Amino acid sequence: MTSMTTAEAEDSEIKGSLLMVFRHAPYGRSLAREGLEVALAAGAMGVELRVLFINDGVWQLLAGQQADRLSLKNHLAMASALPLYGVDKLFVDTASLLERNIEPAGLTIPVALLNELEVRSLFATDGHILSF
Amino acid sequence: MNFSVVILGAPYSSQSAATAYRFTEALLAKGHSVYRLFFYHDGVHNGSELAVSPQDETSTAECWHQLIADYQLDAVVCIASALRRGVLNSDEAVRYDKGCANLRSYFAVVGLGDLVEAAQQSDRLITFGP
Amino acid sequence: MILHTVNKSPFASQCLVDCLRCVTSGDVVLLIEDGVYGSTCLRPATLTPLQKSITELATTEVRFCILSPDFEARGLDDKSLLTGLETVDYDGFVDLAAKADKVISWY
Image (tube, rainbow over all chains, first blue to last red):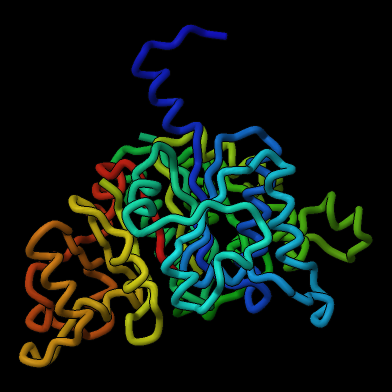
């Protein structure tokens, strides 16, 4: 391993982590599914990853999905695998839940609820952002 | 500064791929570099050899191909997205017993790890949504 | 500073509203593609609530830019630009992305 200057070390740290922002509902389009696949891949690679469910992305977490009615894979089941891939920093925008009348207590995946201020600080955290 | 660009839109269907192309062209002209062009979701269609545009229209796929060749850019399509949408290189065409392959020259087929790695290696990561 | 790109018309999509809920002081919002429809107002006397908040943000803590080729291609006119909005070309877009710590796209 080559030696790095302090600046390079800091820089690679910034590059090393990643925030994924999930903004789309599942099933209607493949964006939610393909975004989730990136998160699972990043988790498998041991990347420092944070995932934020916001806007229509919170629909991905709704319990009771019967994807077999569409002959599709269950999105919630796939999302539930995130912690198994080492992705356990999962966040939800509380306002998006409330807007959609989704009861936070009904969520089946362990997620941290964030208020508007906390969402903004998450965006400001180190690392690139990938939105799906 | 090195950029990685994530292209999620198919050519022609939305403006997205054309915007991504013009952004990439501009960043190269300004002396920045491209670490990787990652074609994902419907963006994999940009790698198809088989699209044909009328002669009096600009073809985004054609523009990409030229830019990638000129600058020898690392241009990759995600294998999972590409297979599902019928964009195959010759290896995959043989593997899945398809009559032909259609991935253009200069494009490579890769896994999602290459997107994650691009995020780690690039100074800037920019996505062009469909 | 975060660069936010928005590529959908606010008349058709929540993208711009969703974006504005997450912008922080010092950020830049760049309207591209159909997103440029969010920059115009033909009757300044009757601003929608969204147009009002854009104008307020643009004159205080957030920089709003419009990608000029997209704006001009759609037949929009500088005269109908909301107050405080600037136009940039692709060079300007690249500069904004380079200057930003990171980029998020709202689509």
